Amino acid sequence: MHTLFINTPQNVRFEYNLASLGSRIIAFGIDYFLIICYAFFTYFTLSYLGLFRNADNWLIAGIYMLFLLPAFFYTLWMETFFHGQTVGKMIMKIKVVKIDGTRASVYQYFIRWVCTIIDIFLCAGALGICSIVATEKAQRIGDIAADTAVISTKQNTAIQQTLLAEITQEYHVTFPEVMRLSDKDANTIKEVYKKGYERKDYNIILALSNKLVEILDVKPQMRPEEFIDIVIKDYYYTYRDKTF
Image 1 (cartoon, rainbow, N blue to C red):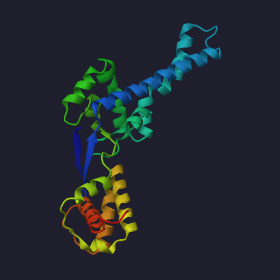
Image 2 (image 1 turned 90 degrees about the vertical axis):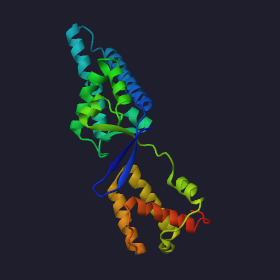
Image 3 (image 1 turned 45 degrees about the vertical axis):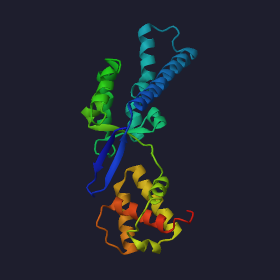
Image 4 (image 1 turned 30 degrees about the vertical axis):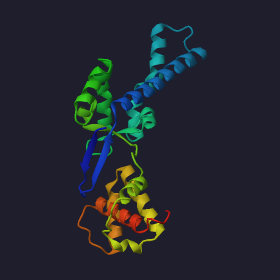
């Protein structure tokens, strides 16, 4: 799986897993299955209510197209109101973001939506698939035009599992001041740290780092996320025989 690295203005480095081609295709399939179901449901409901009786073909088509407007704009309004996700993307745990990792704008969602005509519908998806495979950041034509990318929101490995795996090896405590922390403090730090990365919110990471500097009374010469990571590892190693 390809990754996208972002360095924020606060010098916090985030690593995003780019969504796989398979997950994007499945998400697309789920979304358009829902759209087709809505189209059939609308047609049969209108027929059952008798709205198509004794009407000319143009009027029937006009009424039907009017009720299909929500489906026509489905992708656009879903990504706009659900932070870059449709139902399919939610199920597959992927989302659309700006190329710098932040939330995309309505204009960028609109550009992606318009470009589906080119890279998906006009060529049965072939152009979009080729573009995703060929580009470094797995972008289809719509992503390139909108300066966006599609990332995975899955957490590959739990923080606790990673830490426990790393501290089973020979490890040297960098900040012995972690002894000032309680189990409750350590769990809170771990949860806030995890939340910051899940939300891709570097302000949370920075605030947590500043708070730890104050509590431990240390002056780390490293990036905020590295400092927090080491503090958690130091605590786990110091009290490795205790259960969190």
